[in-house]
Image (cartoon, rainbow, N blue to C red; front, side, top):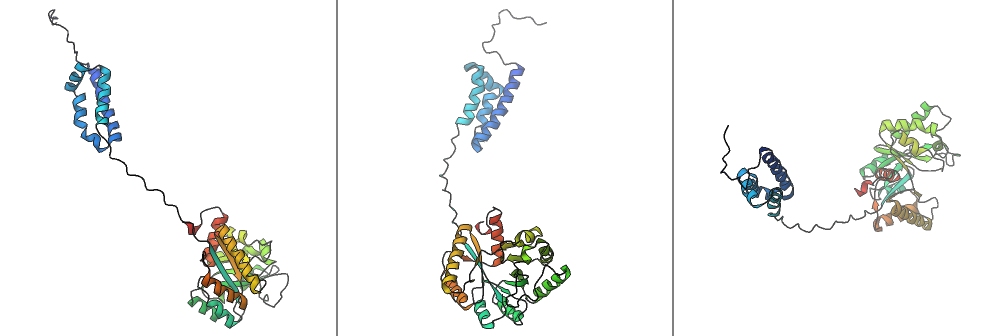
Length: 332
């Protein structure tokens, strides 16, 4: 056994034992990873200095001039504080999204009878949708003309009402008919209007209030991939909930433009339509090919400002989103 030299004086800087060295290695890696997180590329530039501090030679030198606590703290300060990050440019202020213009859809229905007035309706902007009655003999030809002019077309399907005022309900869907007969009548009506995208009810105050009567209609429309605009001829209507339950896009009109055909009344209804569109972002109006209605609409379409004119199908989608409390399609 080697003898201890009695003349040998203990070193004032004893070498750290193995566990201490291992601890310093752990500290090295912890500090290094922290430095990378804080300093990025700058931390890499400081790596040689960090290595000098925690290598065995560096340990002995540091031990000679500082206590053990300084050995642990010093490398962190040397790595982190030598790097000054570049100044961060001022962030651009957020750009406020402009509120989109309110959207309005206008549908002229009862099309097919008066050729000259129908052609005035076809001359309206193509965003105006047109709905044709199936019975008139001129319906297929006028619908072709409207399609060539770019209009979205609907079938104005007759449905049972409390009374048939003008004979237009002779081929109407009725609650007392077998389902097969109602579907036959529906298919015949659809066959009369080429290029149709959807339907809306003509009259129908009784039929549209009957859920059981509407279900086969909704199922048939789903199979054809078309929408159902509720003309809303009764407050008891069940069109929208039944149609949507069967996957058929559906919503209802907001305003009838010309129940009263006087110019003052039509203009008042247009103002009501604008008010609803501003409040909800979208509104749908139904009018008819009357002289006063077409004259006022022609002027309104040419001079109105602050509104977007859209087809009925787009308005149905937007109204559905608004009613469900989700962001409007037009605001995305």
